Amino acid sequence: LDVSVSKVAKQVVATYHRDECVIEMVVRYDPAHPLRSVVVDFGRHQGVQEHAVRRWALQLRACADHQNTLDAVHRWRASLDFEFKDVEPCPICQGVLNPTSKRLPDVQCATCHTTFHTSCLAKWFQSSHKHLCVICQQDFVAVRHHSSSARKRRTTDATATASASA
Image (tube, rainbow, N blue to C red):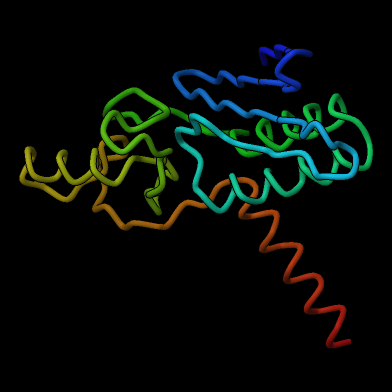
C-alpha cells in the first residue's frame, strides 16, 4: 500500500498493489470540512466489481468523517486483503486479472475446484475441441465462484435471516 498526503490539495491518495491488480483511492477534504463531508473517489480499480467500490467509498467516507483518515485507509486495506484472500491465478493465462476484461477468475471446476476466467476457459474449450478441465481432465462442470467478501455477506445475511425468523 502506497499512501501520499498533500496538505496543499487537502487530499490523501492510497494505491493498493496485489500481483497485477492496482486499486487507487483518493480522499479529498472540502475547504469547509468538517461542515461538509469528505469526497472519496476511486481511480483505477481493476479486478473489483463496481458494487464493492461503492461499498468501500461509503465506508471510507463515514470513517474519515467520524474518526480519522488513517483509520479509514487501514480499514480499506483490510477490506482489500479480504477481497483478494485465496485468489489464485487462472491456470490458463497465469494471471490473477484477465488480460482483456480485467476481472478475477470467476468459474470453478466442480471436480478439482480450480478457478478460471470465463473467457480463458471458453478459448480453451474452443481450441481443444473438448469440454475437459485443464487441470483434472474430467468433464467440466462449472460452479460460479464468489469472492471472499461475497461469501461473507451471504453467510452474514443467512445468519441474520435465521435469527429474525427464530
